[in-house]
Length: 260
Image 1 (tube, rainbow, N blue to C red):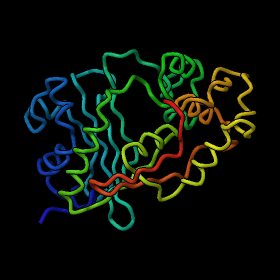
Image 2: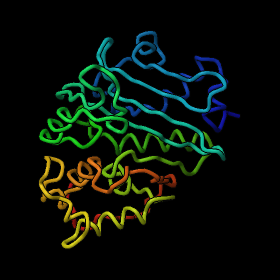
Image 3: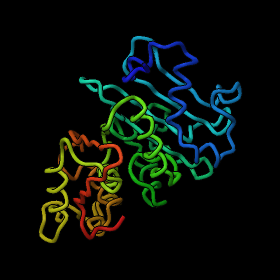
Image 4: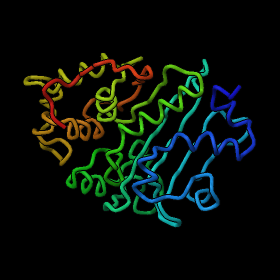
């Protein structure tokens, strides 16, 4: 019987681990970039892992070509305390799009996508280019297919649900649109939406004092997310956990009548 947890998979020989985790990569991604089979010798170098025996998490990086600075796909998965699958971070990068160094300071030190420290100049450029907080490049618009593939992976492990940790406000909204519900944080999301309405506390804090706090930010999810990233809540956007039942959409919407 195959393992049902990340920790269980990580105990397997490397070839088996790679074969199981490779099933999590969306086929549309491989087709788009004409990648070789991921279990082949050429695919071995393009798909890189950190999955030590004894660990309960896995990091996956898929590159479209060797020596490119950023993966087209990055995922960090872990087990919850009761053995469910939890997505800590999930990124799809368009390698043909311009890069914005929001993930590192001018001296090269990491920012943890702006959660540890911020490269303001890079963030300002990313905002102007239409990106959301934490994005170093435009996305690939393949999240729907990626979720479908991931649900197949989760089902194969014997689970009917999985969890995700949205790093930013806009991530939570996107996950809502793909059928996730909140384990924790819905009250916060509702209060944020209320705060951006006319007369709300967040609306009044959009004082134009910097590019991230322009008054029009209240009307779009992306710009709200930048304002929140800039500290408009008075605290970081944290303690939000979401989950999805395989094949079922929760139909939650905490941002009615708000465009992207």
